[in-house]
Length: 188
Image: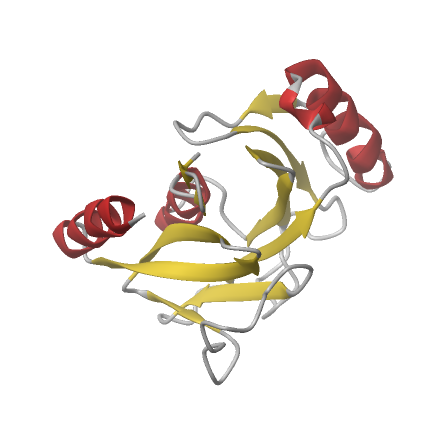
């Protein structure tokens, strides 16, 4: 695990980012790279001994742009989502509720490529906000991401943005792709 932390820390320093750690309890922890231009919306960082499983963590750009990343880490009862098709079906079912109010009219599910996990995402544009001026915390698009880390750890993440082709969206996506799970046995 020390090796993973050293690698994450060196990558973070080189990229103007910092390594973040989420304690999952039972010796498991989630690591990711947070851009220096982003901040957690919670006022105090959780202490390392407190498990963060099931708690929403929200990150936003310091610039004040209308973007955010919401992470929820959950322990699931088994490893069924290690099967790509089972995970894809979960995404298809879970995102159906966004279809009716979207410009897309259906869920276009994309693989979320990561060296550390398997995942899928679907982006939806709110039909009621197209061609409207931005409103703080009322996002024109949302990208629902479902990432299975292995070891019965699932991450549900949402990238909110007014511009899914903009730099803040790309940084949010990089944050998700940097997710890594560490266990007492080593890095997964």
